[in-house]
Length: 366
Ligand SMILES: Nc1nc2c(ncn2[C@@H]2O[C@H](COP(=O)(O)OP(=O)(O)OP(=O)(O)O)[C@@H](O)[C@H]2O)c(=O)[nH]1
Ligand SMILES: [Zn+2]
Image 1 (cartoon, rainbow, N blue to C red):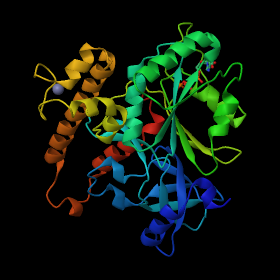
Image 2 (image 1 turned 180 degrees about the horizontal axis):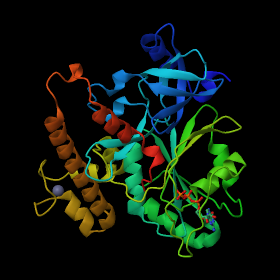
Image 3 (image 1 turned 60 degrees about the horizontal axis):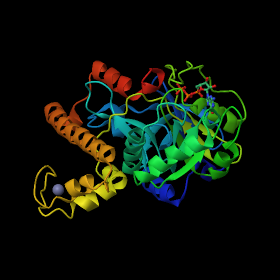
Image 4 (image 1 turned 60 degrees about the vertical axis):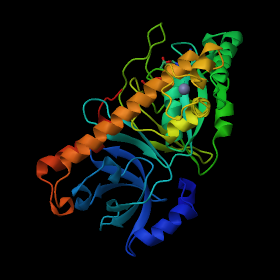
């Protein structure tokens, strides 16, 4: 198989020439398992390890490879084993705020062209949740598509009402409805997937991501979970693996995400809340807080119903989270920064910590 079938194009090629040594070859990270990287070099999948230099002066988790990355490799004698020297620049990087106290973000996957937001139309659909996914996807410069699963459980009229709600919030992304049970709509999803492009599936646990994966692959390699009759999903084991589909495209499955806290986002907000930013630009005062200033365009639009109150509330919430994350990251970075960072070798403990930080795949994380 040629590397272009794995998504390599001239953009990456230019970086290969610049960044990979003459003895090195190029491969794509398809999975991470307990600190080991499974990479595909166009012919084989092989196991690769990081060079020690990755653990030096680690200012940011973003220096480590993640699923979807292109890396420069040096093969060892056995051919089945290699070391990773360099991570090539990424076209796109999907990340989220780390759950818990650590204020650094977590990389989910890179070099994704299209993100499928998978949501069940039968249970627990909220436009605000969709907006949260959209902020994250816009921030990463990825094209979003909404896949509504479980269409067999609601009437076409009820489905149309949900779509109307989404359009009313100013969201104009492509929407497809499907059922993994009857198979309706699955073919349309398959037709969306183009060769050499990378797709990912994002969505809460239990919405039907594994079921859809299995349908697209045509076999039951992903374990699916039975959910309670309320439709709510259960906790499933985490996996993140880049899979090559028969007709060419690539698909990365993501763990179910219960908590989706946003890291610092700016363009993501511009992408998802452009209507609000446009309105705010027409307030009388440029620093309007949209509370009780005169001639506030936001308050006026809320009053006459042109601006949906939930949409605005969600905007404020996400903006607050983003600001908070920015402040925290700046604070943590200041506290952590050692003098002469690049010359200090990390202790064994900090290497272990780093490994723990990047190898999220074997933990449950939703
Ligand atoms: N009625 C109906 N049930 C579905 C559909 N898709 C999935 N299910 C059921 O929903 C449950 C959860 O599906 P999964 O495919 O495991 O969901 P998931 O999104 O992969 O969940 P995680 O692995 O936890 O992230 C299973 O019992 C499926 O049979 C659908 O289109 N219609
Ligand atoms: Zn205002």
